[in-house]
Image (cartoon, rainbow, N blue to C red):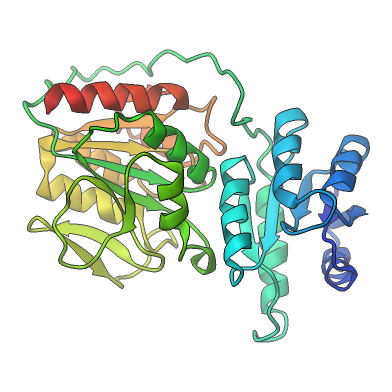
Length: 346
């Protein structure tokens, strides 16, 4: 059995030893190197060629964010950020790292969980992240792929597109930033957003995203009427549209997710129908595919991100397999296309 080769990057010797001991105890994993700062991580990444990197954020000499940006630009490797959700500055750097191409994030061990719980979660996440073999560099110039052929006739555009919904998971923060920056500043169409995030890291994400975007971003509030800007599903809550207002629910998880893209999209199909535009971005699993199909079947316009520009072509792949996407587009084209579509129908 080929073992997964892990590079551990952590400035605290105590934490680094703890992580290495956890990894070494699993017969499917091998710690091939240790680094105490980002500069050393870059050097070891080039010589050791690990399958996955466990990356701290706050380190001397060079931060984990700077190291992530460099590695993803020059020698892409799946990166798992191991960070603190209690430090606001570290939280924002974690979001920056995810936008730069890091695959996932896990909270540092806090010591208040049952013995073995955090260790099992860490090992599971390392293994999942290591399976992602093709990670698109966020600055890469990617050639657009042709749209996926479809036998279904094109849906005539209605006079008004009332709402834009976006769903994303692994690789989502960077993809969402790319799209929001491409949309016209004067756009008045409400934007509803679900991004799968570790719940411990979700609290400040709306603020961070708002700082990256020309459009205001806030967590949706129960009973609120959709308006201009981005309304995001809060961590741990399903967001649905019901009788023209947001409803937040603690309903059952869908595809092990709450919030779930499917839950939002299906409510939009019922409420908005042909006035909806929906976009399903990079992500692991299948959440959002059935909901995207529901919107298309209701007469809405649907887009799936293509394989070449997806960090993980899981959710969009499921949508394509269901023929749920009116168009399949590379990430750099999605924002401009949406801007033209929404402005034309306004």
